[in-house]
Image (tube, rainbow, N blue to C red; front, side, top):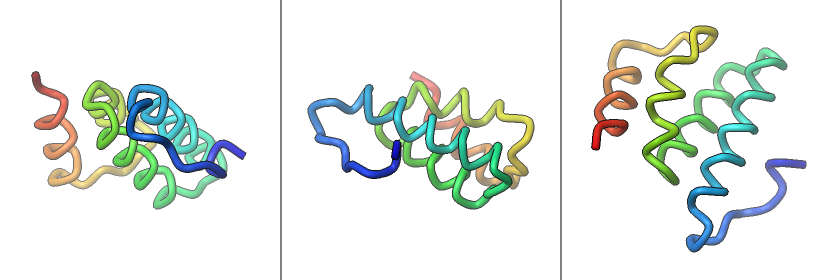
Length: 75
């Protein structure tokens, strides 16, 4: 249900939170690729989610993916 609606551009902070929640649910369900995608989308909406996604220990980020998230998290 969290994944049902597209987010309006005006609500980017809320959209980032929603995408991060989708990623968390996917991760708990064992859908790692879907979780990675949702975490990256959260990062696209709001850079603050990038640092949090990079710290997700259960996600097998490649070094390049982790670097990308960490770069985008910097102000």
